[in-house]
Length: 185
Image 1 (cartoon, rainbow, N blue to C red):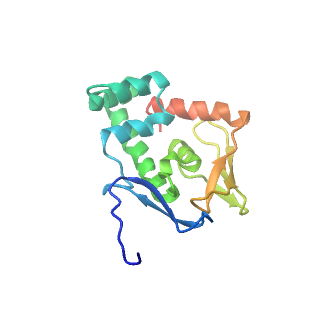
Image 2 (tube, one colour):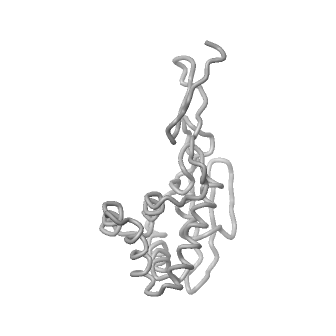
């Protein structure tokens, strides 16, 4: 009936439609901290871009997740000061991607979010409506690189972009991950 209310008690994506047409409205429910994440499970989950599968599973299944999280950063950066700086910058970028790219899923989980977290904001952006290209200038002894995203039609949002993955960016990507792991970003 009109005027009825619905209580949405779980975080997540909700999609409402009135008939068989599938046209409707989606709503994303997040916790109070969002776009910042501070829960240790979410801190670990967002390390998917830096951690090996073994490191990730060890952190996720540990009895003391906070300690394993801290060990991940200390073991890789080899310095408490570098670890602190890397953690601060990494989660600043996670928060920024959540602000910039959240649609039907958290911004850090999108392809644009992934690239932004690892490389930061691009130097130049070109958008023609169907594709968006991000250009990163040469820096820190790394060459310039382009990332291209295709706009994909999606039931839940109008602006969903998917990274075109190609071999040309693989070496650059792995070098960037290595820099994060060593605390050089």
